Image 1 (cartoon, helix red, strand yellow):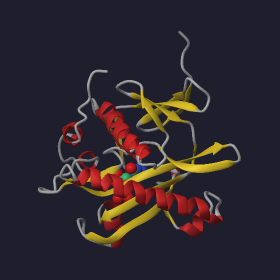
Image 2 (spheres, rainbow, N blue to C red; image 1 turned 90 degrees about the vertical axis):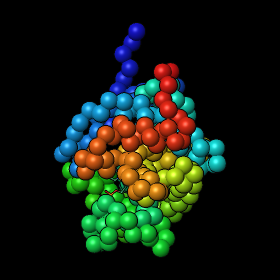
Image 3 (spheres, protein in one colour; image 1 turned 180 degrees about the horizontal axis):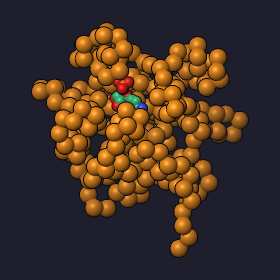
Image 4 (cartoon, rainbow, N blue to C red; image 1 turned 30 degrees about the vertical axis):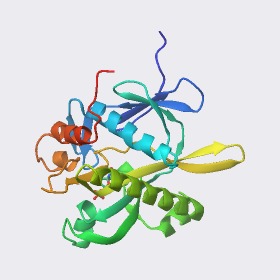
Length: 243
Ligand code: C5P
């Protein structure tokens, strides 16, 4: 059997060449990092949970007409995705102040925001993914004004969908990060949601107790990350099976 060609290895995922042109296989590792790789651990089963949860969210988004790279899950750790040209920006949507926003602006964690706030970060590990303005994005050619408008629209639609889905199972979507990628279709190009959407990239708080059910459990040593993600999967009805 021929060895698959690895296209890219990141902190939590590996991309392999897919079976058809224009596709990739996205493999979810158990590796968990925080602080740009400063803290690192293997957390058994995390990759399986994130593969399943990202499938659930991306399938739902595809179904309501928010385009994503997700095609189908292949097995417990892998999914088939469309190959995209990743835009080097992380798009963060915040509904409640937490994390770096609270630190940067001195706003107490848990403060409800008057409207969803969108931030852009430049994807660059050497620079620790700095926050950037739309001016920077356009001036340095990372994306056009049209791309920015499209990214904001995608991010807000993801926020509405994910907030509702989480609220239905007693979880508050505090904030999340998405990435987008370019696909080319004939004479046109458009942006679609890429990468993953999982408790690694969201803040999820139990509505009743405020318990954290996301990667902050690892970042802040609050207990078992697997238990937290399993609880999210259980509530959403997608406990991983041996497939
Ligand atoms: O750290 P910060 O408060 O800016 O994170 C905002 C949201 O974006 C959190 O849900 C966090 O998990 C996510 N994030 C991410 N990847 C990064 C930075 C932040 O998924 N590199």
